[in-house]
Each structure stands twice: as structure tokens, then as C-alpha cells.
Image (cartoon, rainbow, N blue to C red; front, side, top):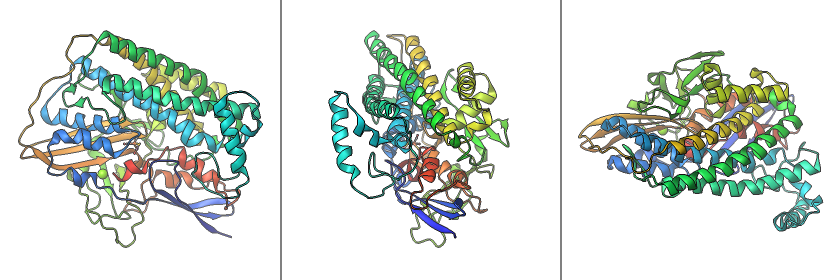
Amino acid sequence: MSRTVTIDPITRIEGHLAIRIKIDSSRVVKAFSSGEMFRGFEVILKGRDPMDAQQITQRICGVCPVSHGTASILAQDAAYGATPPKNGRLIRNLILGANYIQSHILHFYHLAALDFVDITAITKYKGRDPVLRDLKKWVKGQISSNVIYPAAPFLPRYSGKYIQNTGLNILAIKHYLDALDMRTLAHKAGAVFGGKLPHAATLVPGGVTEKVTAVKIAAYASMISKLQTFIDKSYLTDVGEVAAAFPEYFRIGKGCGNFLAYGVFPESANNSEKLLPSGVVVGGRLRSFDAARITEDVRYSFYSSSSGLHPVQGQTVPAPHKNGAYSWLKAPRYNGTVVEVGPLARIMVAYLKGENRAVKKLVNGLLAKLGRKPKDLLSVLGRHAARAIECKVVADRCAEWVEQLVPGEPTFQDFTIPKTGRGVGLTEAPRGALGHWLEIDDHKIKRYQCVVPTTWNCSPRDDNGNPGAVEQALARTPIANSKNPIEATRVVRSFDPCIACAVH
Ligand code: NFE
Ligand code: MG
């Protein structure tokens, strides 16, 4: 008998994502992903000073603001012909790197781990840590409640198979709490050069406004070093434990198998080399990326603007009562094809390119340890593993970049805003490929279009009826109990969706 189940909301934070799945013979046969709100940043930006864009677009999201600020200043760099000096480029990388670390730790521990870790194990805790004892008391009180809810931080929750080893669960719960401190630390590290976080104050076209001093270098380096220890000793180990306990999730949530990365963290003045390179993987083959091939369809989205436009011509005209539409997300496609973006896409592209030796070594090491093949990465666990590996690669490189800063050297190159102009800023947010397209007329913003990671991943069907990346990843997911579709939530959350970003 077939059943339709709606999971709404599905993410633990960040917006209104609803997933509707049709289940037949205990498997998902069809999935629909809906972003349930409109925000209108592209409309708000029209007519404003272009220099407002890096501040306003950072308000798209509190988790990945630095990426929106970065895309915005890259678009303006291009429009004004500004090139940041070396200190400016390095500081941008350091702020963005700290924001990546914060976001990846947040996702694994606070948004996804409790799909696998059994929070009720804390009731067996016998130690003296006051926070864990408080949590034990709270969880004991909650256990009696019989409510089912897919998105609470602890309880209620879906029932299903969780990690069974009590010691391992309690250790993971302790790491959940440690991870809150690590997020604070990553924000503080980013704020050394970003002025504050979330929503860095120092990102400007031409570089950054923050100056380099020996004290700031030492402060950032010491915080990154603590984060590196947490990533090495807790994050990577805990992902390995989840992988060992749930090997079936190397076969669940495969998805479309196509990947797109714009590349991120420039290693040279002209952006030609990046720590994580750009590329497209279609049918297992790596190709070079061409920004001209990006389009956004809106047949199933609540917009009355034309469909299939390149973001250079992009329009955002909301149509809340549009017939047949089921999402406020547009449907971005690359060369007409559905692609997945995010840490797995970046790691796949870097791995296939083979130039980043740290990525190659970490991926091969993890696969050998878990007895897996590269193709197993196309899965729920592959996404978690890729995110953890990327977190280490970024943190380790941040520790090197900070030592390359030169106190007293400039961090900024001056510019003038032209009467008319265009620019595109392509970068990568923690959740994937992020682009901002800017058009200036009469020194003001004439058009501003954002194509955002979760818009790629959680898009509805395109004009040809092809389901989006998450919709495809859900197909064939086994669902043991349609009243507790925990398997579907694990698939969706492996993409780390952020609907606040996606609908922007
Ligand atoms: Ni709101 Fe974001 C990231 C961006 S996801 S978190 O990472 O851009 O669409
Ligand atoms: Mg957009």
C-alpha cells in the first residue's frame, strides 16, 4: 500500500523546508522538496548603493554570512577592477575559513549527530560533570512524553535504530556540548579579522578594512590550534564511529551523482589557484566549470518571471498563488543538468583533480580505515565524511595562512564605483557553490541575483520535470516505519539544508 508522508519542518534550524515523500513497498518512490517562505533580498537590493550589498546579503543567513559577504565583494572587485593585496586575500580566507569550521562543527554535532547518537543514553551517566547531570535530569523528564517530532534538538524525536554502545553515546553527547564551545571559538577567531561574527564588518571590495598586527596573528593562531585539536581528536573520530555503526548509510542517499564546485579560498592574486578547486563531475568524469552554463528554472516555483534565465538576466517576481508551483526555491541547473553542491562536491572535484595532496591523503586514509571505495562516498555517510575531511583541510591551511600575514603591509586597494558596470562573485559557502551577480546603473544596484547552495540541492523539479538533488537522493530510501521516517530525515540532513539561504 502506498502512503504519502510530509515531514515539516525537517531541519533543526534554518528555515522552513518541507519534504513530502510517497512510500511504496517500504521505499520512497517520489519526493518533493518545498521551501515554504519568501524573503526577497534580490528585490530589497535594487536601487541601493552597491557597497550596501556585502552587509545586506550577509543577513541572508546567520550560519554562512561570510560566504554571502565574500560573494558580494568578489562581484564588486570584478565590477570595479579592484585586486586585494596579499594580506587582504589572506584575511578574507581566514575569516571565511573560521566560518567554515564553525558551520561544519554545527552541522555534524548540533544538526545531524542526534539522528544517530542516542540521547537517552545520558540517563545512565554516572559522572560528576554538572552540565551532563543537568541534561540527564531533563532527558529523564522528557522520556515519558510520547510525542513524535522530527526536528527538536534532543527529544521528542523519531524512534528507530540509534548507536547502542552507552559509553560511545555519552562521549558523543559530551562532544555535542564541547562543540558549542568550539563554535564560539571559531566565531571569535573569525572576529579577530572580521570585527564581529556572525556578519563580519570588515569585508569590503578591494580587500578588508582590518589591519594586521602581531597580536592579532597570535590570537587567531592560538584559537585555530585548539579547533584543529577538536577536529582531529573528536570530529573525525566521531564521524568514523557513526560510519562504523551505520554501514548501510554508505548505500543510502546516493543522489544524482553529478557535482559542481566553483572553487574557494584563492591561493593567488588572480584567483586562478584555489585551495579547493572548481570543476564539474558528470557521469563520473571531471570537466572544467563554465559559469555561462548556469540557469534557473521556475516552472514549479512561486515566481512569475521567465524560466531558464542565466543569472545575468535573472528576475525575481514572486507569485504566491501560481498554479502547479510547490516551492519558493528556484531550480538552478548546470547545462540543463541536476547537480549536487557542497563539501562532497568540493572533495570529489579536488580528489579527481588530484592537486590537493592533503585531500587525496585524507580521503584515501578514511576509505582504507572504513574498508570503503571512492564510489561509497556518494551516500549519506559520504557527505558527513567529506564535510569532516574538508573541515580539517581548511583548519590546517588557516593555521598556515595566518603565518603568511605581514604586519604593517596593506590589506586593501582603493577603488571607485563606476556609473555602470557588472560583476560576478563566485565562491563556495559551507553548503556549496554560491554566486552573486551584480549589475550597476547610475552608481546604484540595478540587478542583484544570488544562486545559493541549498537552492541547488533542495530545488524543486525543473521545466523538464527532473527532480532536484535532494529529491533524487531520497528516491529508493528504505523506510521501515512510515510513522517514523527517520531514514528520510538522515538523507535530507546529510545535505545540511538551509532554507533561509535557499529562498533568500
Ligand atoms: Ni544559511 Fe548558506 C551555506 C549559503 S546554504 S547556510 O553554507 O549560501 O544555501
Ligand atoms: Mg536567487
